[in-house]
Image (cartoon, rainbow, N blue to C red; front, side, top):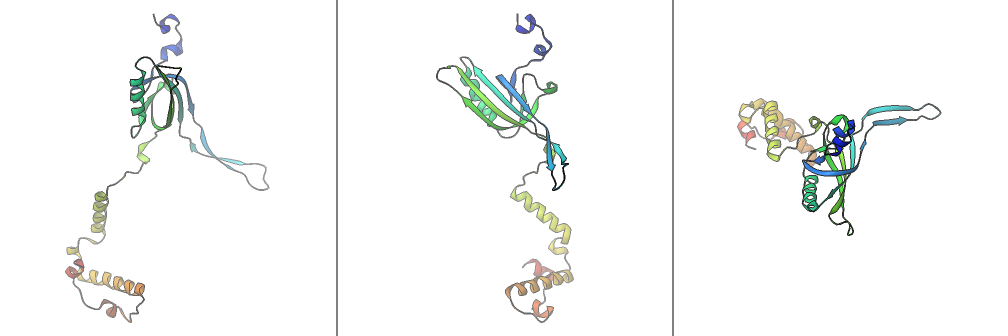
Length: 206
């Protein structure tokens, strides 16, 4: 006979074992933090402030758990590995809000073991809501950035073989004048700045 069947109660029927990334642990206490991000505006010579709602705060979960028993060391190692993995993980608490598991990131954790408490360790874990990944920037590799740059260049001016001689000469004029201005020399005209005539193929090979 279990405690649930011997003393039936609505909250006992909903109680579940806590786990993070599938690694189970016991819970002493767990706390959930939330609220709104508020910017308070207080003005000189005015007795009435203005509180501006800036959106919901990220939810935080502060969990005081423990592991106990002859095989607690194996469970401790598995839980530490789960806490130190990259990226988000699923946190299951004994009585979560709306009975829903949450995807979280690990902010910090602390493991406490005492000499007089053999076969037992206490785990303090600080989790924060993972949220919606669609707003996160994707990290691009160097080759991906180079490919995007060449693609954008082709869209704007086209590959070298498609550039007309007139377009090349126009770009070269501004390039030469800009260079002359930076090195401190004077040019009396664009023709003097160009110095010689180049074709599209010549410009592409510079």
